[in-house]
Every structure is written in C-alpha cells, then in structure tokens.
Length: 201
Image (cartoon, rainbow, N blue to C red; front, top):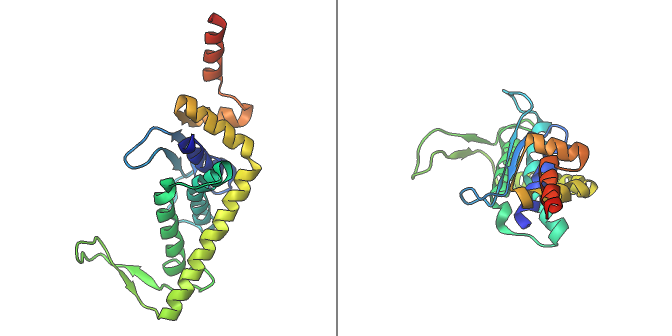
C-alpha cells in the first residue's frame, strides 16, 4: 500500500503539473532496488531544457515522498533515489546552468577525466561563502518544489487514492489506464471483470 501511494504521488504530479513529463506506465512490481517505478517521458523530444521544465521534473521526483507524508503521516526510505536525482538537477541549475538568484555564472563544470575510480569530477571555482550560497539556493529550489508537490497532491487527493487503489489490485497501469481513471474515475476492464466474478458467485 505504501509503494502504491508513493508511485501514485509521482503519477498525480505528472498528470496535473504543467510542463511535467507524461506518465506512460506506473507499476508497484519491484525493479532492482526500487519498490516500483514510473515511466515518464516528455510530450515531445527536447534538445534544450527550460527552467520551468527542470522545476517540474524536480517536483515530480518529490511527489512520492509527499504522498507518503500526507497519507501515512510518516516517511520511508523509498524516496532515496528520488531525492538524489532531484538534488542533482537543482544543483546543476545553480552551479552549471545559471538558473538561480546567484546569476548566470558557472560555478562548476563537469570534466571528462577518470580520477580515483570516478567517472568524472567537478572543478570548483568558488569560495566557502559562495558554497554556502549555493547550498541555500539548492535548498530553496527543493523546498519550493516540495511545497508545490504537496499543494497539487492535496488538491487531487481523490485521484491519488484512485490510482493507488488500482495499483494495489492490478500492480501495473498503462497510459490508457491512467487516462481512463482521470476521465471517468474507474478502470473499466478491471471493474467489469470484478463485477462479473461477483455475479457468477
């Protein structure tokens, strides 16, 4: 149930947030270290990311943790990778893309050298004071996105409950399934099958 609500949280953000990637598939079937996953892709192929689209991506990654908090009044380790990716995007916005109040300055650049077993290293060209400012900006981006995710999920609690319910019983939802749930509030192929079984009994 927790995994279902976590994944439903991601899905609700993808459905309701402008500029978010489109939800193509949601499942609670474990995959690697993940309890479930969302397959979300852009509406169209992009060669450039806007600030709005990056903010939407971060907000989407935070949707799972927000759903856990709202529904269960607790949190799990399920958002570990979500936080990792969200933080990487936010930090890149601040230090590489000049998308923060620190201005259009590149503070870090990714090098291609292999050093001490790492695939890359980042060259840092800033003081401890600037490092503190970078941390503040990253935290501000994450916090703002988190509150945005909370607002969207609270406003769409019924949709969250519906998606989580169907994930619990069928485990995997396709884009067509999700579109039907959003437009009709039901999943006809499952509901009809369940009704047929009840009638037969």
